[in-house]
Image (cartoon, rainbow, N blue to C red; front, top):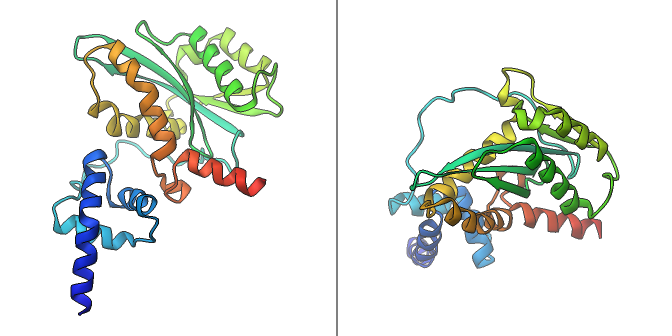
Length: 249
């Protein structure tokens, strides 16, 4: 009798799991479980989802390669707006164009705060624009941040330019770069790039830089609103921020 009940319950969940897996082909069972709970409002066990996915050949192929390098530093913080990290990456388009993207990410709530793009490369002026927009997104139009916020990046020339460092400090940012030959110190930003390319870029329309630009806002919005994070107990960045705001209120 119990077996029949479990079978019926599995049959009810399977189409929902398939729907999520089709929409999120790079998601494993833990993140699919988080979205399934949000969709149904039920406390569904992750092991149950894994079993259903395994039985129906819906699990991701296990990755067995060794990591190229490790990250031993602690980048995350205990609350929001203490440290923002930034990095830049390129998206190669099918027509030969390359779109460069630089972004800012909060090291606690993982929200992608804002971004800038260019087909000519990210320079110091664009990074300074990124700093300005990041401050405005979190604190409004202020001359300086209300408390010191660390700005962490790698040693790219757009970040280390004298004008960029001076501008960041004039706005109250504690501008920091990773130690030379230690790019893994900015591991949170690097991990975001890897995840973003896997979950969004490689599944998108890369026909031209213009087409990619049109999709970026949607991709980043979906990441902020819907992408579950293990560090946030499988909540999305915006969901986590809303819960923090409700507790504070």
